[in-house]
Each structure stands twice: as C-alpha cells, then as structure tokens.
Image (cartoon, rainbow, N blue to C red; front, side, top):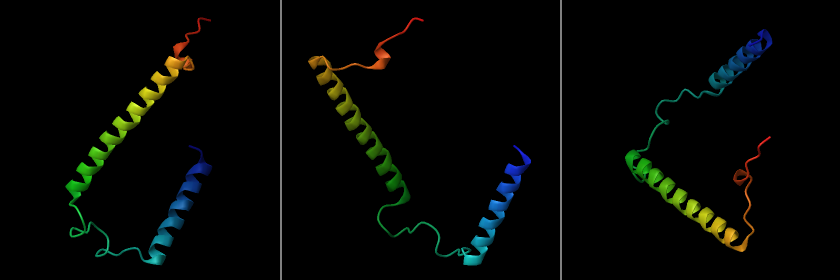
Length: 86
C-alpha cells in the first residue's frame, strides 16, 4: 500500500467515527433481536436454508429443461462444448 492510500483510509475512518459520535448511534437498548416478533432466530435460519434449497432446485430444473428443449431443436450451442487446440 502506498502512503497516500493509508492516509486516505485513516481520513475516511476518522470522518466515519466522528459522524457516528455526532449523530449518537451509541444506543444499547434499541439494537438487537426482537424475540417476540414472528419466528425465533433458529426458525428464520431454517426457513432461509430451506428457501435456498428449494429456489436452487427450481432454478436448476428450469435451466436443465431449457437446455434440453433447445438441444432437441438444434439451437443449443455453448462455448464450453468447443475445445480449441492452438
């Protein structure tokens, strides 16, 4: 890293810290997980993992189906199917 980049980093860091203290973001009671709203934290984690699995399966199946239909019509061509020997 050059001296200029280090000085810019320190300047931006100092400005951010000054803004943080100026607007008073040091509140301890309002920040955190609201345990009485909706699911528990574990429930949200499990729902996110399940949604990711389902979304990936649906998108993967759609891509495979689209490639299969294009290949049957003779319109499917991908650059990874061609190997160039230079």
